[in-house]
Image (cartoon, rainbow, N blue to C red; front, side, top):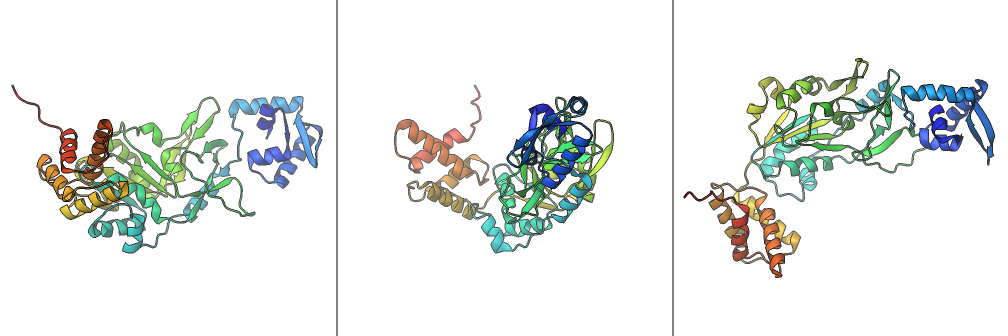
Length: 390
């Protein structure tokens, strides 16, 4: 409150309520206490509200507090309360094959794959999606969030030993409008968070980051993902080595708690109440040892697609793009892909080849059509050819 006045010059209780997210009774109590301590000077009234600024003694105290921390925003909640709320909001899912199919309605997935994903999602533990590239692992991970239809509360900030850690991130958290007069405004109703990190993941992203200019800590990705999903995409290709990541998270995955460290060296416990999805096209046994793989509750192979699934994906793409298609085009594309890729069919081929056909048609100023001739041209661009040997 003093820092707000130090930065803005004057304030009203209404302005403080909007910024600090504290109730008027609390703000009025603070206002009268600060007046008794001669830290405030009353400027007048704005309607039924007080207008006030800092006295000389107030400016001295606010300056000293600003050297320790310059945070001015919603008041933080205690780390104890944060633990309780996150634990109470742990995901519970009721799911069957039909509802899971609805969640993945825009993907073509075989029933046996859905039947492996269903129990994994219900458990809301950890999930290892592995298999060849281009078969939809990332697309599957991105759609898991659809099985949740509830709202969770995310605090703007948390206080630990006098330090402030920001949690709510408008880039990650999607607020939901909720009308509840009893709701503490320091908490934001949100959809369950969903965060994806890829090759950029480093050791520093898993720890508190201190903003040197404000002396406010920024929470790591796993803390922001609490009560939601964190996807480690292309696992094994990060700046952070698999062994480092696995050693860092072997306890959190097992016990559902993590430990973070303040700049002073003080360690404290935070909830690790999230579903971690590892997605990789590398061999899981080459990435992790048995002890770590045991802590990942489900391992699901997203394999190359069958001819039937391939044709259904092709049909779905053509219908979605409303593209005229020559009879037999799906079977023809399938044959060309098998010919170029050692008899393997990947789920990404139909959409990737369509995009090339579209680009070729636009380049030549012709309407987009999925013909065998256009497929031949697109396939010749899509698949790498071995260089000629002189």
